Amino acid sequence: MADRDEVQVARWSAIRERVGACLRELRVSAAATSQARLSGDLEDLGYHVTQSMISRYEQGVLDAPLTLERLVGWALCCASLSAPAFRELMELAGYYVPWSSEDLAHFDTMLRRYRALPLPDQIVLRRKLLWHVLGLRTADAPEHRMPLGSRR
Amino acid sequence: MMLEPERAATLLAERLRRPLSDGVSRPEGDGAAPDGGQAEPGRLGQRVVPKSGRDWLARRTLEELGIHCEATGALQDLKGFLIASHRGVEIVVSDRLAPDERLAVYAHLLAHALIDEAPHASRTFFSRLEYVEGREPVGRSSAERRAEMVADALAQAILRGRLDGAPQYAYRRTREPARNAGLRPALGRLVLDICHRTSLALFWHLPRYQKLRSRPEITFLVQRLESLVRVAYAC
Ligand SMILES: [Zn+2]
Image (cartoon, rainbow over all chains, first blue to last red; front, side):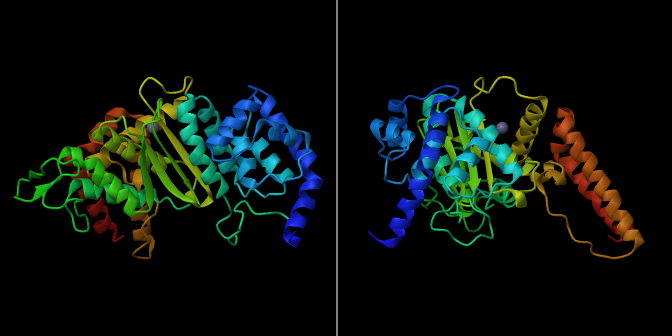
């Protein structure tokens, strides 16, 4: 295993329980999303995460690190997601979200409107949102391999 | 943020006013409209894009500016939406809309980006959803309803190809640099600034003023008055 992968796995081991608890909280609070539904929604975004993987991620027992893309996708599929909750989750997972207070407020309003839409509209919007949210970074920040920027 | 609503709205209005201006070629050339229809001859003998081709022209113009446009059949409650971030700008519209409705959505979304209050420099993310009539979220605030009304008026100005049929401060964020120094030019600029601000305030609150301001003779009058002030105050 390459050094970088070992570091990533070690980092993940240190945070997986907290991240898992946060993801579970996101999924079950407010209008709860079932594991089956979440798995289907993630599949629709192009990520294969089975129900059993969801369960193990939430318990913090899965060794394979949850990628940034899947993490953001998971969050977007949960009905209780808000901008502060999103930022909290990202910070917990070690990512810095460089949003201004305007961005944050705007994203929150956007999420509320998005959830009020019928499912087909939500799906179209979610796919687009995922792409844009993954690209968020400060204008003057150097190009990151992972656009949200890993925090040391 | 990559979205430059002022530039996009200005160029789109210009193109819609003169559909066959330089730099825009037809997809199939030879006068054929993009929908396969025949181009209509204009008054002065030049060909103009038929009404059904105007949405193609708008889409083409936006894409020239780096705004990715896409149509989808999956939208139900939304006519379309706009998302802008560092990853780019995209507009998604429902393909159930007729061409002129799609065109109106493009213009309306741009208008929203123009009137957005937050300074664009501090933004890394902007989005806007446009709803099918009757499917709008309930309980919209009066500020939101007013913004809708203003966006509609501004979109109409874009569609008519006459952005100057709206107050300058509604579509122009960048202020012209002072040409002359001194007290008199400064006073002239102050007078103009007050006039533009008043016009913008009226535009935001009075639908009747929006209508009045959109009339070509009023636009002409406003431009003449501005020229007079500029001459009188050497500003
Ligand atoms: Zn609107």
